Image 1 (cartoon, rainbow, N blue to C red):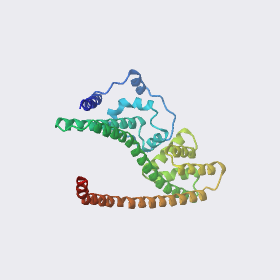
Image 2 (image 1 turned 90 degrees about the horizontal axis):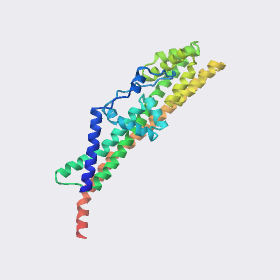
Image 3 (image 1 turned 135 degrees about the vertical axis):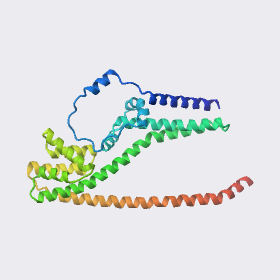
Image 4 (image 1 turned 180 degrees about the horizontal axis):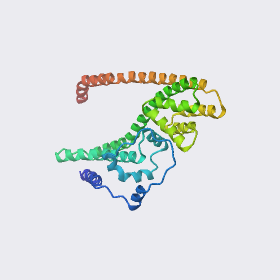
Length: 301
């Protein structure tokens, strides 16, 4: 009982400390304020695809733990790429991870404290085990969510890229040049993939680099190999005069085949997931029917 009360006291103290940090956030240092007033110009690069979200309460509460998580080597390189695809900052993501982990650790303590106040305390091992489990789940869940969202964003970009390739073929067939076809095709489409391509091409014009170099940088940033291959094919046409229409036609056909295969795989996965509720209902029915009989048998032994 004393160990349980000690753990509950520690959890309550951490929760109060997090609440105080959220209500009264630490003031930035003078160096940070001066750095914000006079930012160092960064080299131009392909911008993110999705505008960063405003910091919510979870980010503000978990911000004090960002330095500790960064010292531990987080986020990983793969996770940084996923965050770049979604347009989210690594600091905000680490703060959300810390908040979710702390919430998972404190929730069993709050529940155990409520039961202890009602005169029905749990054994101390139960809240500790549940707190560790929920803490690990809360720490890993934001990473899994970001990966799933980044995969959906990349898939949406591949659909838009298929249409972009078709538009480029039409413009090239009409006699347009390679750079003109790239720019005009990007101006036709809507949505964030075409907006990202337009920003990359605008960055190429402003920095006086080749448009296919900017597209290759965008493909590397978003981890979309099809866009990088498009940039390589267009680079051959722009520098060596290679016939690009046939190459783009083949790439568009291969991209559509892959999209059809992905759609079929998603449909099969959805069909398999539909059987899970039925299996759970059957297991529950079996337990409901046989549990009284098993109870009677165990009592008679």
